[in-house]
Image (tube, rainbow, N blue to C red):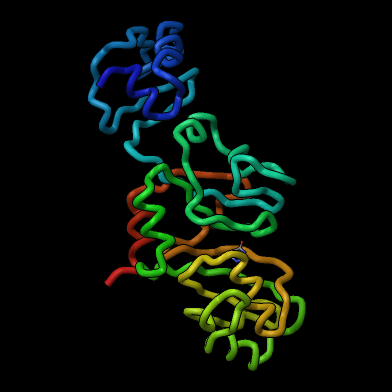
Length: 237
Ligand code: URA
């Protein structure tokens, strides 16, 4: 593939823009500036740098973000900064989308990708990929509330009661709630329907992939093959 096309596919702008960057000497391969936009390269596993920043060619982008408080999962946020302001321009340029949205005040594990099939597979209730939330409650969680969440609660506008796939009390004010759907404000509405109230909400795992301890709020990283295996690991079979 031509170098200008490779850069374009990785989110660095139009082909014309990429050609300009290459001709200006902003792109290096194996630490050597390459100023020929038309040089043919095998993109598979290609390492290159743009303005000294290292990149690796990836056919699709799969990343995890530790979503901080006070960010909206929209490209056109209304009241708060967008999560896209936390990502480098090429990722925004290749139009990664969040795999299901988290509320502005929800924190934790958010996946983003430019692979539509991947998004569909993860959010489709048919695939039953569990999403685990750490829910801090306003009132102490009692046994009736746990039982209601496990049995199913009736939400406004839903035809049938919705049950948590799992619900575990961690302490008086903290439960781990596992859902396989991703309905609007689902955790907050389920907890309210069970007679309590969400004070803080954090997504701690999707499938078998947990939010890493060393990924600080606002930080992102690529999903590597081992992360993708973990992601699907617990949800298939
Ligand atoms: N459920 C909610 O209520 N909010 C979220 O952000 C995610 C799940």
